[in-house]
Amino acid sequence: MADNTTCSIQEALVWATERLATAGCETPRLDAEILLCECAGVERAYLLAHGNDAVPTDAWPQFQAWVARREKREPVAYITGHREFYGLDFVVTPAVLVPRPETEHLVDEVLALARARYRANQTILIADVGTGSGAIAVALAAHLPHAQVCALDASREALEVAWRNADKHGVLGRMCLVQSDLLEHLPWSVDILVANLPYVADEEWPALAPEIRFHEPAHALRGGANGLDLIRRLLGQAPAHLRPGGAVVLEIGAGQAAGVRRAAQAAFPDAHIRVAQDYAGLDRVVVVQTP
Ligand code: GLN
Image 1: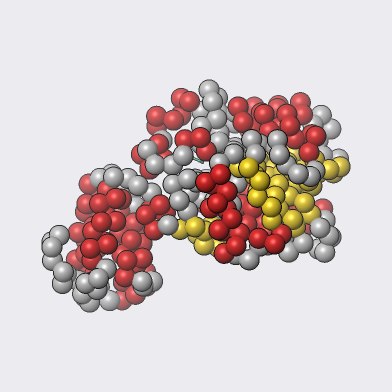
Image 2: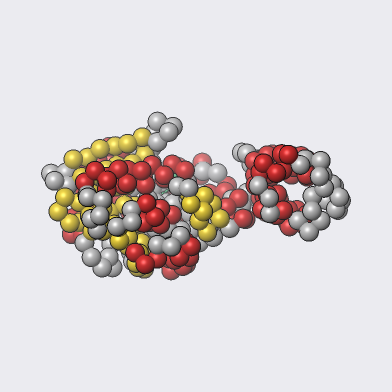
């Protein structure tokens, strides 16, 4: 099969799906389809409708190389170089975490808050702490035309990816990108602090998928012994950087709501604190609303 340059789309998918399944990939057929689409420059619907057509000869060597990478459990998004998040397509490199669907809840909460608390044409200042690919910051800027969004990250490589995504989606003019350890170099106080910080606890780390452990940046995932090191530090810094009536919106891991709630209450004794769940019913977002 490997040297057959005239196999059909269907045969190529069956071949790749088998290899990826054997390698332990969770969604081997879907992964194979996405990789083949990218190599052939077609949509998934095309693959399904043209299963008997030959795989374009120029797509075949790349498809084989990509399946081999995926077999080593490299995330699909690193192979293709992009991932959809909140309806937008984001450039993704191994310097940044692959944007996850559960993080869309974080964006939902910030948009709901912005629309409930601020007039439509009012300038809202937002900081996205640990922006990574910029997915959260760019999605917010794209949906809030009067927001100014500061994207912060300790990693220069991550900020370069975030810059490309802000540029790609036409929101660079309302964003600033700042290399910063949490809020250290945040240039102004903001109305909303949003963050998907590293929160994986040490004991959870060995159980994570190889895609995560061996390919994604650990410094973007690991939050110390109980996972809350960075969230706690951020909450400690937050009161000095939040405007009156401002809010802090944090992504958390399952089982962390009580600990984060306590830390938030200590930082903001008068705040109203709410926990929202993801589609799996797991606690996923903590919203700290100051009076
Ligand atoms: N939800 C992610 C995971 O389990 C963790 C994201 C994070 O640490 N911010 O892979």
